[in-house]
Length: 124
Image (tube, rainbow, N blue to C red):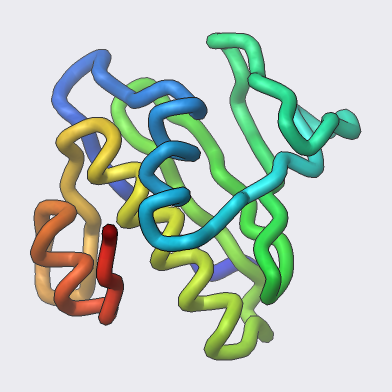
């Protein structure tokens, strides 16, 4: 079973992967792609605009990114360790920062700067 973190965006404004990847670079994550829609990907590949699911490599393991019409959802396995949950949070922050989104947390929706503070993320 997966544990997810959803980032919501204004209608029709889900950011492109390259924008998310640029935000990840600000926190020292190279985030190579491993899969696009269930197929192997080159690490530096840019997915087509119509992608539905990406698998992204982090030092701690792999995080899945699912795209909806107005949201991106970051997913890790339920048995993930603290480092993999931190990678998921980095990805959620990067998504929110790239597209002016809000991250859904147990205490409500928060914008990227507030989520960074809550998650201990320090972008450059």
